[in-house]
Image (tube, rainbow, N blue to C red; front, side, top):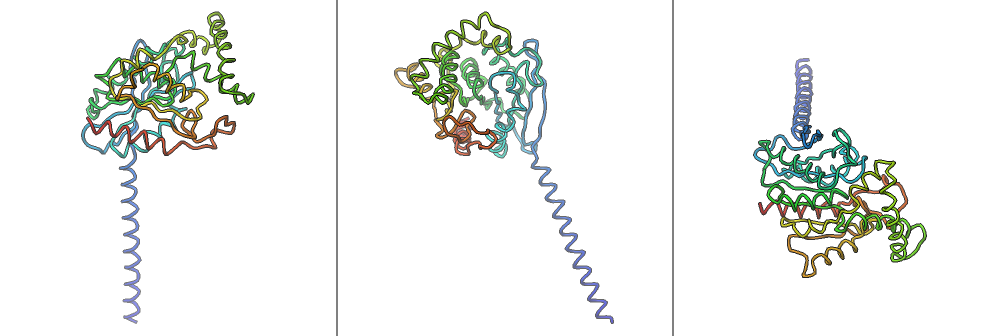
Length: 332
């Protein structure tokens, strides 16, 4: 009887011991998960009579000053942090937070949670807003003021080019994702010509000829037909070209293009770059064309007409972006 009781006690102690170990492990995992969870903060930056809504994600456990990447959204009222969340997470937060970077984004004036009117702002206004956000975040004691980078998508790529040219003392480098190296008029032709070519199964040259005439007529009419916010914005930005800014950029600039981008032709973008620099593109400007990808750097064929949720962001382009950025960071 004694031996049986003793055996039962031992079995009970073993069960209690295993349970305690499991509880300790669960608490440890929970603690580690909580510690690994990034800190998300919101800031309000006042500039030009507007209040810009800024969101920053970082590893709060990391000591010392951290490099900061600021993401610039694209065109139109729908281009907000919320609508770019998946892109920011995939291309920036997932790969960069573990490397010690902080990632910021802000709703441009008049969109999302930012005050103001978006369609009256020109590209210099947008660049000035980006500068104001950078200068504000630069004051935080965990931001490395010597390592602030810009990444902009689509129209945001133009803004990267402007801000980098005008403020080389503030921004260490910049990445333009599907941002054109030609002007707004050419980009409109590019956009409409791609749709025309896919719809009518015609040549690119014919599509460009047809759409060049239509865009010229449309821009003339847009001076008078200002019944939508989009047309009001078009009248503000229609004459913009990035030439003067690209020639003034001295900091490292990466231009990312996508082979099947219907909005920004990589061939025409590179041709415009070569025309701008007949003696050769400066060493501080580099470019990369992502094969088999579209405007948001998702893998898709030309003239893709399926659901965008059915295609994935490109790990290859993310790797290229992160490698280039970390190389610039290593030089600081």
